Amino acid sequence: SVIIGLCLVIIFSVFMFNRWRITKKQKKIIEVQKVEVEKAKHIIEEKATAIFGRPVSIEEIHFKPIQGFTIHNISVWEQETKEQIFLKIDEANFNILLAPLFKEKTIIIPSLKLSHPYIYAVKENAAQWNFSNLLAQFIPTEQQRNPFKLYLFKLIIKEGKIDYKDKTVTPEFFETMETINTEINLSFHKNIKFKGSSQIPAQGSSLSFEGNYDLAQKKISSQISLQKIHL
Image (cartoon, rainbow, N blue to C red; front, side, top):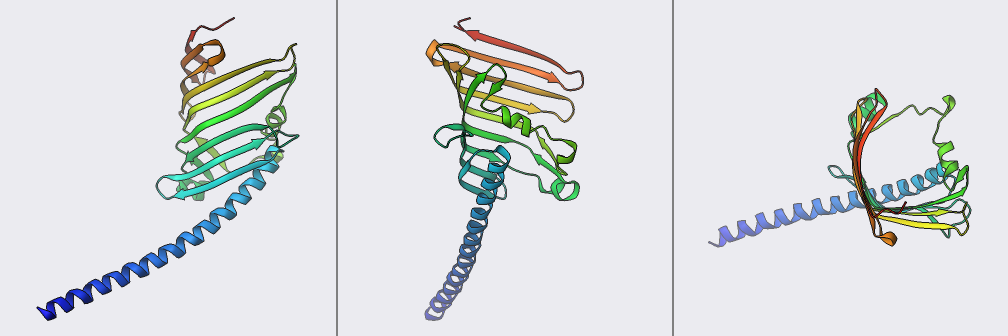
């Protein structure tokens, strides 16, 4: 019985040593991953700031092989000052298919989920919004064509909010749309199916919509339901 007990102790000790060694290796891998992710976060912030032409900050980035990327607290500030948020996303989740990325220079994102996104939209005058400069930047010229193709097949928005201000009227008009929930499914070169809902608390109003956009025929069909909308 003593020999059996000794064997069990040896086996257990070897098992514990292996577990300790594996755990130590895992800790080193995790530490390296954290450093690399932190570097990637700063690079993304710098690139995004340059692209948007306004300050961009990210709190955390996490990556898991199956679940993909999770980005926490993305903030894009107004162009002139860092006192007013233009765009904020509490959490963004997405994954990337790697095979097309390396073989065909194609970035395929099966699904992108945005949780609690917020937009502050301001109409400055008849021809300008507080995001007009962004629209101009995101229409690439022939010289700016990206060698990578990007395909997004599903966009999910959960509990979004929009603050809208119109400076072209006196007094200035302000409205809030919240509880925005939307799902958009894109079929490659065929159609875009969409559905969603939102509320306007100040007016006690709500709306819901569902529809389809045919990419080939450039036709849209949709059903919209409105409740207590003041026209």
